[in-house]
Image (cartoon, rainbow, N blue to C red; front, side, top):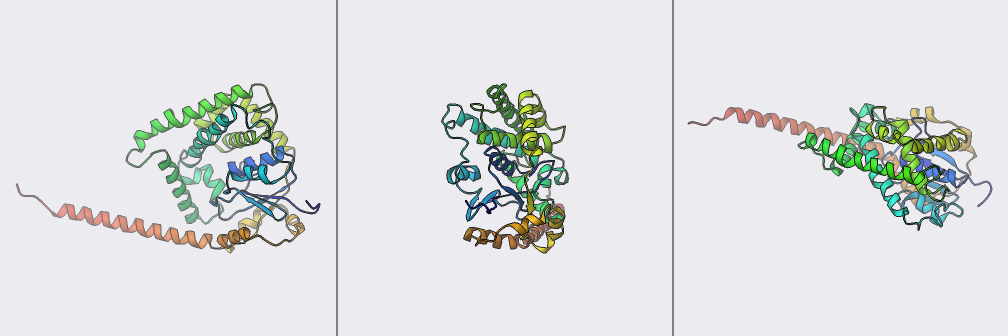
Length: 333
């Protein structure tokens, strides 16, 4: 690797006192920090629901999160010196621990981020993903993702009250609490989960723990469950002190946005000199495609908003007509 090459991790924006509020982005950030791999952060403010984010640029190499196994697996496979899991990923408890982190704990956090708050404006997920978008667009995108999370857990408008207790108490929170208990036991007084050395599972859990403690409100059930395990909380706080607070990463804001978000991008730019110092290189086809898609993102989503509002208006009109029709007919005894 050439000395003047700048390695860049492209993530969603910083919030809640974290370098990025997205758990997938944050886990990649922590993994590279554990590997002591030099990089800078680049905040991508548009196209917030892209499954390509986070992605990593190293010279002409670009790894996207939607590639097989996710970004961390791509880095382990393709970038020398960053495979932290070598020699420990075959341990008996590894697969079980990874499954708990990526299912039970991930599901619980997703539920609290997207469904657990009162309305979209108070939701941490809205702040993380959509607050830089125009209000109608951000609201519709948030509503769409929240509906998907509800459907994933079998919650509908018809059975919402019945399912609420079942899903929250019996399934989501009980599983999360079991996962916290198991992780607390495995961690013990060690500094890391396995063999007392950092791994991808440490990065995944720490990202989960940081977002849970920093982004969720004090009334959060999941946050209270995590706080019951003192060694896990100590682990998370120590990580924040050593990897985030004590060694901030150079940052800048990626500028290929539409005019509608330019003012927001300018206000969040933290180091314009970093942008100028980045050497030019020929973009790959995947990057060009990604940029083309981002240009039309806002326009396409605005069309979706118009269609959504049109459908809802038509539905309301039809309901009114049906009510009128019901009132105009009678049955003779």
